[in-house]
Amino acid sequence: MGDSAPQDEGFHYYQLWVDSAKVPDSDSLYFYGASRWGSGVEVPAKDQDFYALKNVPHGQVRQTIYYSKVNDAMRRCFVYTPPGYDNDTKTRYPVLYLQHGGGEDETGWPNQGKTNLIMDNLIAEGKARPFIIVMDNGSWAMPGQTRRRLRRQGPRRDSGRPTGRRRDGPTGSRGRCWKTSSR
Image 1 (cartoon, rainbow, N blue to C red):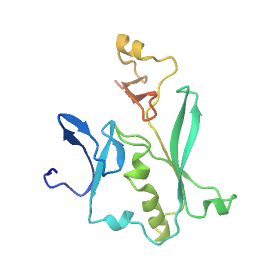
Image 2: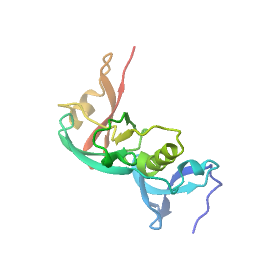
Image 3: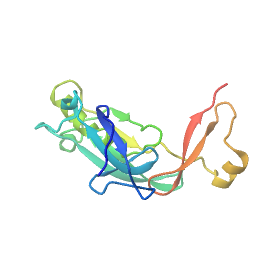
Image 4: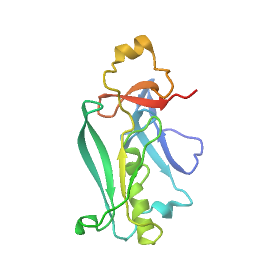
């Protein structure tokens, strides 16, 4: 049993400490955030109707596995398709590529962000036109980059060249968080 200070509205990651060890709460779902898998809790928000599960037509969130030449590895992304997407193969939809924040991965938007429920509700209310949303992992590696080279030489600092730090991706493969340097 534990206590917490009052929390702001919205989604929060948390962990339990047992004998000096960080452990997830076995009574919680696991979420990826803060660069680790852990537990999460949602404090009800005033605008929770915006992302509530309602009796409206629903789209789908599909997990898609693909090979990345850049990473020379198999990767995963999630794709939201609007209600009725599979019924009409001739309709063309705009696509939004939605990226996660630092320390998160491709699971954040569909799980914690409730992207599908928000879109289903907006489409049903006539506040959005149907479109596809691709939620991919924003971590990647440049061809030829290795962990040893990065440790030895450090990040690149040339103008317009990628710089960043390495981190483990959710699939266990090494990824890279990039920022373009500028002068």
